[in-house]
Length: 321
Image (cartoon, rainbow, N blue to C red; front, side, top):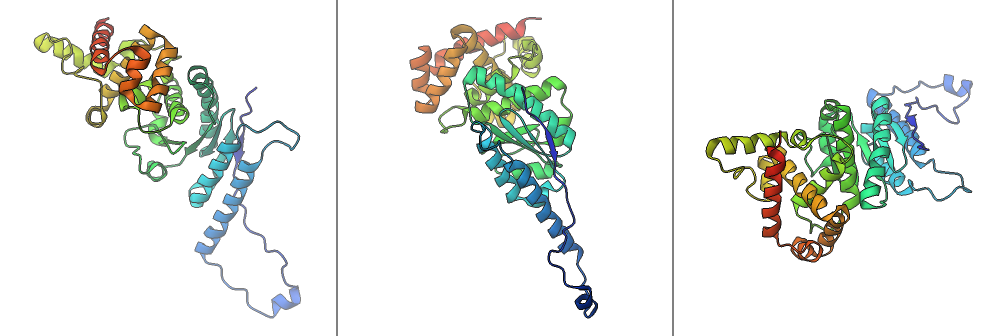
């Protein structure tokens, strides 16, 4: 059973401890408290309450807490920027701790993270859980994600945490939210040495993210399908410009929608031809030794060979009505 609960973080007004007697108090003037001091005290109280909620683990006789590492990381995140989390809520799911505002969104993301975590575990295997931070503003999201960028993204995984960009996330459909959370938790689960090319890293995260979406290929890859159709109409090159090669960092920067779609189709092709387990094995091998040796060892292909086969597969799928 999923144990997901919203825990509001109150902001109590500090109560003096050990106050002097009425007689002593009457003999001196009570100093003024500046608004800044009040805010500082409230921030300290908020952090204390948040930490108490995050540290509330199982009883001593209970089994080991699978959320221990995420709870400790969430505690660290709150301590790094206490003023950002005044009035925030905390929700604990099966494999994620979610901190942020408003309370309803925090609870929703915790439930999404439970479903997403089960999908990630089914495909990739177990992982250590995650922290999801839900700030109030895009500016706060940018601060939390730095040096990663949140521009144009609904969420980003960085340093083992998922940062939600609230405005962009709010514009997503229910299916879109599920895809995004699953995509980012896949990044958390598969994090490792920088030996995995961007097309495999992002394509695999989208492959897992879209697995249970029920969306057709041309819906998921709508921008790429439009580009392929335009190429065909222009010179009959059947997507020559759009499917020039497996996308690299420059493609993700210049034409992000198409690059993500190309990467997703590459991973979808590998899973369709070789099986999902071989796709996972390719990723794990790339983490160990880089993509060239991994392709030869797991798929018996070179990068050029994979590119030719992926291009043919993508053209065929995108040409279907």
